Amino acid sequence: MAKVELYREINMQVKALCDGEPSLIANLANISAILFDRLVDINWAGFYLMQDNVQGNEQELVLGPFQGKAACVRIPVGRGVCGTAVADKTSQLIEDVHAFDGHIACDAASNSEVVVPIIINDVVVAVLDIDSPSIGRFDQDDLNGVETMVSFIETIWPKK
Image (cartoon, rainbow, N blue to C red):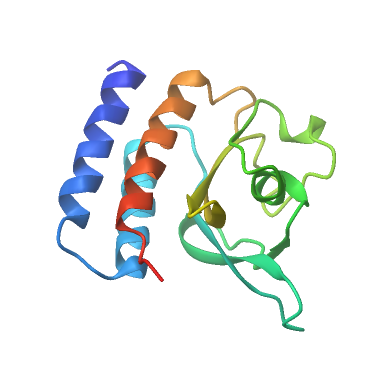
């Protein structure tokens, strides 16, 4: 199946599963499970959520619902691929994470990564992160499919 069609199906499944469910954590958990189940050649799929750091003086990414091996719990804004996505408010499509300056290796088996920030009212509230053990696993079709999913997630994100 072509990636475009696969992501169309995944996004339909995500929308159907989240329809009418108000629990953000339940929805993010199911989305990470769907991604981990449906995408081939990945070793991690999940979310990091923006929260106050331990000192309470700034925000950082904190591990949220995911599928895969245990992961880094806290990531400072601007550090690693996820922290860069937050700082720049842009998606990151990384062919080889070892060539990414400042990469944080939560799982030494990860070699490529796609990260898309979830933005509400111009503020990054979380990121969707997917890792693969293969260099060059992700391409523009993956990025487009994940960005479409994040656009949907932004519509179901609780409003403050």
